[in-house]
Image (cartoon, rainbow, N blue to C red):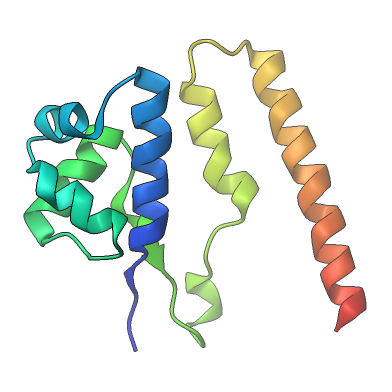
Amino acid sequence: MGGRLDTGRLYAALDAERESRGLSWRQLAAEAGVSASLVSRMGNGHRPDLDGFIALVQWLGMPAETFMVWPEGQPEGRRRPSLEAQLAPLLRAEEELSESDQQHLLDVVGLTMRHIRAKNKESK
């Protein structure tokens, strides 16, 4: 099976951005150029159509790949990037954070993920 869309991840990102901007779901939909019913259906686990998906990821300013579920058994060269690698460009683009703040957040996430990975290896 190939990759597929993680609607829950997309909806969570939309909700976080909506809250950070102080918008209602209806306002988000209007800004993104989609129907309010589309975001409502997504809240119930339904996938958006392709045009809706494109409009929503463009509104978020995030790459579409962020919301893909990576298939099992994919070639090693196509492994999903680490959380740290995914967060780095997002933090670098955040104008409210100084360079040292960005690095601090990356260090905290990196340390936490190393701890989690080590703990997961021990439990296997």
